[in-house]
Length: 291
Ligand code: PXG
Image (tube, rainbow, N blue to C red; front, side, top):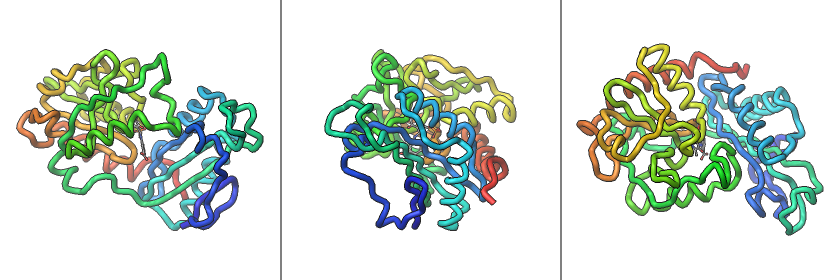
């Protein structure tokens, strides 16, 4: 496997960065997770826009242009002969001393692109649905650190993952500081109630996921069902007709139980199944070609 590291394609074993990089020392940096399907990069423009927005928010200047980033991604995919892949873009603050001050980083930010295969959950979970639990770790609030910055510090989400795993499930529902549903640990959450699709807005602590946006579009334009972005309580989730999560790595996964409350008849719901079908066919046909 070849990894893109600061303009070069290097062997996986040789893809190393300094222990003085502030990405390692402080989690000071940003990332994106993108997917390629059938030789096409799904929603590349949106992912690059979000990466540049995360950079702006932390006052980090990415030393290459978006077009150069796109070329670098394609070059890495081609070098690894991957047409379906998960792509991880990482931009670190660069090397500095042992103090927090990013202004003292003397090297430019490191740009890393890793491309590989990924299957986040076993295949049967996509057909049978997943059980999740609510965890005690609350999603970060907008007034401390915006959940929309995809930073290299994912401890908030990792703590949720640890608790989920201890409870024997793979995903966690995270609440915001007011106790309303924000999102899952690294995925967005949707419910269906009376044929309306509902998902928490950014103001409730949800990252504006790119898969989330695609699902909202499909629901409105293809299934012609109303979509509302509004505050959701755990009561709304427990009593929903359907529930599912979305994310680049996870894609669309039906949720059939939350905190041991079965969702409807504990089978993936009809709207969820239609959205999964729509998603699967669209990702293979749309997107930026890599060849
Ligand atoms: N919420 C959080 C906190 C996320 O980190 C999503 C929602 C879903 O967003 P997208 O744009 O992917 O639909 C994410 C995305 C990884 C990985 O390697 C994490 C994400 C995406 C891809 C890979 O852990 N999180």
